[in-house]
Image (cartoon, rainbow, N blue to C red; front, side, top):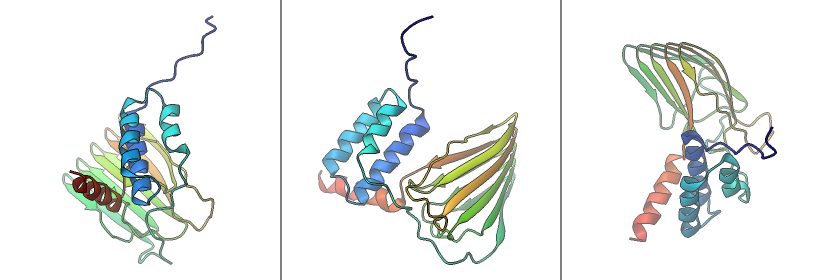
Length: 204
């Protein structure tokens, strides 16, 4: 048996995307300058392990949840259905406390980056049958994922928030993928993307 420790596996594309999103959010919040952002983004591309990625954000303050909470959602429950078609929720919208997303030979996109989430838990039940459901969340929003894939796949990457306040927004995803897929992605907020883009244009 070898005495050498096993080499750390290379970061997944989703891990690199999450690190990139977090760095862009920190730049938009004024935690790092543009030069530092560009250096760290280059390091994200060159990182050879997940611990290397973690070091790129470990010295920065904890990100607050990007989406402001509202007192109560307008509805207790709701649906996002796609039957051999597409359905999208994005921009500034108010998700219900219980959102049921169903994609049958179609696609559903749920973008929570600018959503007005209620305090506490928002529960998404995602069912993909020969279709796909994509859930996009901002860095800093706590997300837990539970699910079952039958001849399909579920991206069960979770992220914790900086605060343990039970009243803070939290997203819980329960997923079923039957010959389909459910994917949860972390992306920088539209505001952060715009700030980064404008600053880069000013330097040209």
